[in-house]
Amino acid sequence: MRQYDMKAAPGEKTVIELKVTDQTSIRVLVIEGKKQGKTLVVTAGVHGCEYIGMEALRQLGQELEPENISGRLILIPVVNEAGFYAGARQVNPSDGKNLNREFPGTVDGTQTQRLAAFLETEIIRNTDCLVDLHSGGFCENLIPHAYYHGAAKPEVCAASCRMARWTEAKYLVRSESRNGFYSHAGQCGVPAIILERGGCGLLLEDEVLADIADVKNILRGLGFLKDAPAISYSHTMVQNGRYLDAPASGCWYPRKKPGDQIQKGELLGEIRNIFSEPLCRIHAETDGVVLYQTASLGIETGAPMIAYGELEKEV
Image 1 (cartoon, one colour):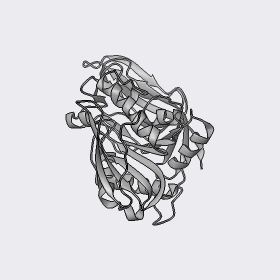
Image 2: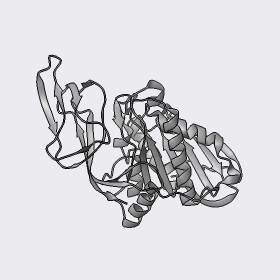
Image 3: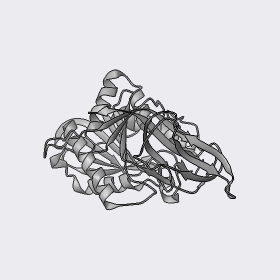
């Protein structure tokens, strides 16, 4: 059952605190346009140390005025507040769980599982589309890229891809994932994308401004903002992503950088122990491009290590 009515009076902004549990809240900014229309939710901070999107939404919330908006815009700068304040990498410190791996969640589970269930009921089920902003956390480098649906209904996948094309990220990645905030939105019939920009937990103004520009361009494309025509950018399409976790704990020595094109069989990196004895070597299983990788020397078994995907074509 829906608990909150996330609306403001026409032509107004308002901040609403959504109580998830006794220990967990989410604060949202609702910008209610003077003209009626659809609802768009833009989120950041699913992972507590990915700062570019958080700051972009903070600045957007100050910049955007209701008289220039058609429809309802809901900005959530920090979804995982516990992780943000603790500086936690990917997880909620209350239970050690990664929110993006807990959908659809459960109302009687841990804090993270209850938060996932709440996001489905209160956010996903009450919006027309969703943009989720991410970046590299403390130990992750990446090339700007956007994920769009590949495992939802055809019309949802098409709408998701169209939204991704309004970003300036060079690579658009077709994702077959069904779990995760944006992926689960697609399973619920809501077109959504993830926009990845920034790395290593750094807060750089040029990357914040690039996120702001992309979100505003999406607003134009969807008809929420009519100050200028939307720009459709050229992109390189990526499919069949491979997301590799570390097979051993040790010292990680990558041989490539995000954005590097790779060939099947090429050495991507190796893990050695602290005395430089080799533990494992990682080779590319296909031609493609490196999307992101761990930037820290130390890596533990099961931690995200490197991701790459197959190139399609320029469009």
